[in-house]
Length: 82
Image (cartoon, rainbow, N blue to C red; front, top):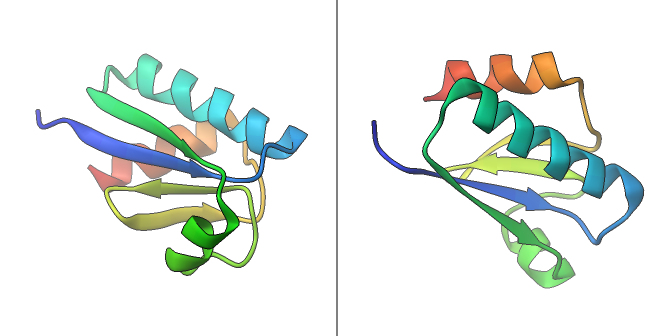
């Protein structure tokens, strides 16, 4: 399995921190080999085409924007994207 790159986009608000926590937990539970990067710069977030944070980006594709869904939903999205 190849190593994947997950980015959590957000300025550090409680929802952003929650999404980062859930994404890390989901990756761990799915046994994914991934690098998780937190992107907090507004300019970097805008460059990715995201207008609402928090957002989750997997290998350059935006999976979630504007909220922190449940752990199960994140696992579904990750499983369907790799």
